[in-house]
Length: 371
Image 1: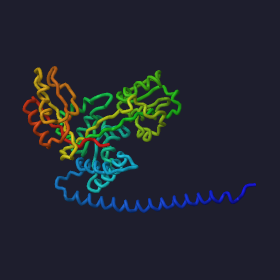
Image 2: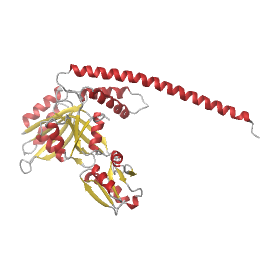
Image 3: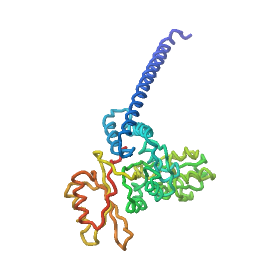
């Protein structure tokens, strides 16, 4: 027969855990109350600053980049830097909304990686504008119907987005920010058994980025490219025994099951997006400048054109070649360099390049992408 006294230690431990749990919850409640006061005070100050501005520009990428860099450097955990960035972006987004509702155009519909990139950069979209093409994103910002636009410019696997580069040559808009988004593809379907899937929909680039996974796991399944991954998810939601390659956000929007996660062939698959606006951005302390240039078709011309960067010790982070469409075998060169165009060395180098180039256009200086 068991001794009833043996249960007393267990009851004591349970009571101690309950008391500790309540103590922790009480402390969290107190901290939440204090954080609410601090966030409200921050919002008041942000609103006051808005009233002191003379140019009407609400979103300051350079200032937000400085704030986020400082906070991530101060962060000692346990939350990772990416979580800190996400939290404070949301706070800043809601503070901005007290001054003005910002409209942001992106390649739609909802559920695309472009929407995800826009949400990441702005900490929430109070007035999203879904566009049917990259051209429309440019037009929305050029016309003033959208305050900002988010467009894809390159993917680590598939390379540059040619249409974005072509439009950058034609527009008066400025690049005011960049976003690097880790792209994770998922197999979505109404069907819970992958073996019953007979067709997979997705954007052509996503199909290419998951090519090897599909060959290994669904070799006999038909693949059909559509205008966007969100459209693929919509079709999969309407048709039996079909699936889509899309984001988890698309799964939520179209109420699809996630059959397989992260099916991209390259685990480091990343897409870079640009933020477009009608205004320039001041230096943030860690910036990038984008240029597009052309040179005469003579031997050594390109090397001579880029020589000022080496002379002034400026690092070039990207060089992309694109047909100029003005003549046979003539090309434009898209260049990203470290630094802001207002930096003395960068300004001097650009001045020398301008003297040598047959064409030069400053696309914008902006903060280097954060986590």
